[in-house]
Length: 100
Image 1 (cartoon, rainbow, N blue to C red):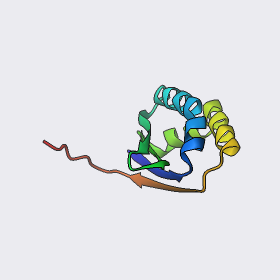
Image 2: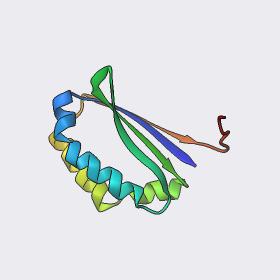
Image 3: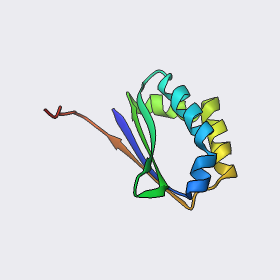
Image 4: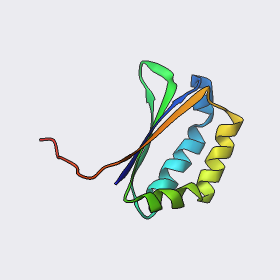
């Protein structure tokens, strides 16, 4: 499994302006083959910080996602409301331990 953890530093106004694009991106990405989760969230104590968490079956599924029309549309929306910074990390998870 590939896990993506992204932290986007922006402004609450830019994040609000991206709300429709974010909703579209979540729905379309979750419908893709190989996607287990695709979630955006805003930090409660820092509304200018957007977090993106993704879980993919494989690197191939993630790479296919990068070439979808909804990714191109989302990148265009982000370009209209550019963040101050983005930090993306990709992790390969070999085993998952359930918490009980």
